[in-house]
Amino acid sequence: MAMGGAIWWCIVLYLAMATACCSADPKSSFDDDFSIMWSENHFKTSEDGQIWFLSLDNDTGCGFQTKQKYRFGWFSMKLKLVGGDSAGVVTAYYMCTEDGAGPTRDELDFEFLGNRSGEPYLIQTNVYKNGTGNREMRHKLWFDPTLDYHTYSILWNSHQIVFFVDKVPVRVYKNADYENNFFPNQKPMYLFSSIWNADDWATRGGLEKTDWKKAPFVSSYKDFSVDGCQWKDPYPECVSTTTQHWWDQYEAWHLTKDQKLDFGWVERNLVIYDYCKDTERFPTLPEECSLSPWD
Image (cartoon, rainbow, N blue to C red; front, side):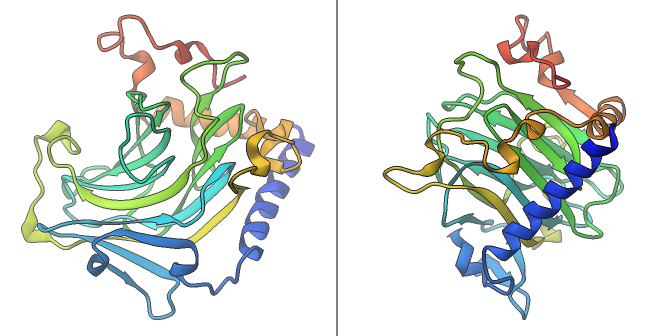
């Protein structure tokens, strides 16, 4: 890529992290940004309050959500996933317009699908608009996500949604230049994370069940970072885009040349499933599948 483009992207990511970190006390507590959704007794923090642990046992899982909702921006978190035999366990990190699976919700999903020991962890991404999803992609990872923390991020503007793993774009979901019912861009979203049992589908299509003798299953989180348009009723600034933020300027509407190289490598080596290529499931492919992630 042109050197200027590479420098630009490095600068904006640096500014995004700096802005997000400086917008609140870097030693702020979990309670400053989040609320527990359920099972507070399955939530713990490190002694300094900077690492958060969610646990799942045969009784229940646990989840949290941001106190604020946003429309567009850069959203990032470091996660370390459940180690060992985690078949049937799903750790979810996602954005959604509401705290329940409502029939008109918009949603952007990272779901980490547990595995039997020795098998690769899979990540599943999905996009919902007005309650309709079925836009799954699944990828392998190029590292073991249980050994250390890795950064999972979502870039969301009115032109594209990009899912990043350690700043590598693994999925690009484009908007069209006309009004449509597949790109979520009207409703603000909270950010959530949770751990729960999904052994009816998560591992080998439900063939591998959760081994509760291995419970509790624990995922951990730290370094939440957001540089986004915070929604404020009744007249939020983010009703319309202004391009005043880096994540909503022209350079963030497309992948850079270097990002395209990374994305091409992901496409060739890590994609397990792409709904846009599943003609058995969709004899007529969904409308958005005609849009190129490279544009």
